[in-house]
Length: 103
Picture 1 (cartoon, helix red, strand yellow):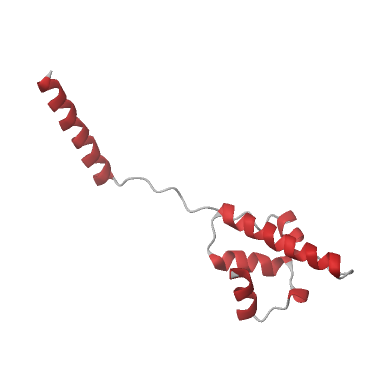
Picture 2 (cartoon, one colour; picture 1 turned 135 degrees about the horizontal axis):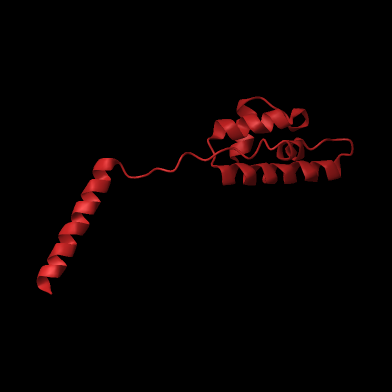
């Protein structure tokens, strides 16, 4: 549905789609790398069904996948800030000292 809403909002008929349109949809949707690829493959299936019903049509999603337009990149991994890390280390030290005192 997200793809169809995007197509409608951009006034794009399926017959006019290109690999660039699919890349634009994926870019504007803010999808993770895995989801981008899944969307591209699902869109590819839709166009495959259209191809079977209408000879002479093309499958822009296949082109997008072949051109690696669906790969994208994930956001960088988030790590603890220095302050968060210091707080965890201090907590572990206090826990270790309490364990030693009890022994």
